[in-house]
Image (cartoon, rainbow, N blue to C red):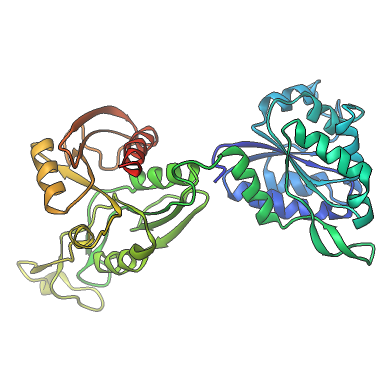
Amino acid sequence: MLSGRRVVLGVSGSIAAYKAADLARRLVRAGAEVTAVLTENACRFITPLTLRTLTQRPVVTEFFSDPQSPVPHISLAQWADLICLAPATADLIARAAQGRADDLLAALILDTRAPVLWAPAMNTRMWENSLTQENVQKLTSLGHHWVHPASGDLACGETGKGRLAEAEDIVQAASDVLSPPGPWSGQAVLITAGPTREPWDAIRYLSNRSSGKMGFALAAAAAARGARVTLVSGPVDLAPPPGVRLVSITTAREMHAAVLSEFPDAQVIIAAAAVADFRPAHYRDGKMKKQEAPPTLELVPNPDILLELGKKKEGRILVGFAAEDQELVSGGRAKREKKNLDLIVANRANGADSAFGAEAAAVTLIDAQDRVEEIPRQPKEQLAGIILDRVEKLFKT
């Protein structure tokens, strides 16, 4: 949602300032890098230490508090991708509308060229006062964005409109401001990643060298474009990308069950996992002793997940991967046709150009019109963007 985006969280002196802790945590969890800026009165309601702990970044409270940045309202204004003011008091809104710069936060709002998102919190009569509403309208006309206050019980004991919006609504608004609706917005995307493990006793299994990096990069890139991403992954040593729902599996049959469960709701499916084609025919509880091990290991085929999806895709966009050790184009073309794919990404299974476990890869893309595109070796994060660009073209066909 907010992966890699830099957010200044401006906190002013409202009783709702304590909720900034939860908001900061959610922004960080969504992938944002967050710097908190507190007014003097905000520090009476929440300590800078709390927000510094949650954001793992310094908290700025006054013009000259950081010797490394003698003009923080300028350096932060240039650093930020978004200024999020939550909670925002009537006083801060008024000062911003007047173009005042009498504290650090007001000066930052005046100096920034980044979008500004307001989440007000105040007494109902203060919010509904015509002066406040005029200030809101003035800032709106200047391009500022709003998450309007909710109705409910207020700190003063009254009930009405003025409560700070829920943290998840503010995070969503921040994401919407930084990622305006586009072709991926709201698309349900299902991605598979990583290897599977096929056990033949309690401690041994068959697997492959897939790291899951390509699938995770695709999931992060799709989420950053506004998609709702479900990532079904085998065992990998990777943290789930921000804003992505992770379904962890171990075996091919578990992946088969998870993918079929998620498939009906998906509009785009990208099968980047390296699923084991075979599994041991027999499983033994406990550890098989060396002297008991059979001279051969009998294998049986696993479900062909991609083949099954291709038979029932019904208008969905289906993308697969092909790891080939010889002819990329002929091997990828054959797999794309057999499995009824809209696009296949072919890469090297071995040798110096192998994509398995690597940070970078070269791939060959083959679409349903048999067009072939060679993509030179580059980091998988960049490859993910290229692949999604090609998938996006399929939205219009």
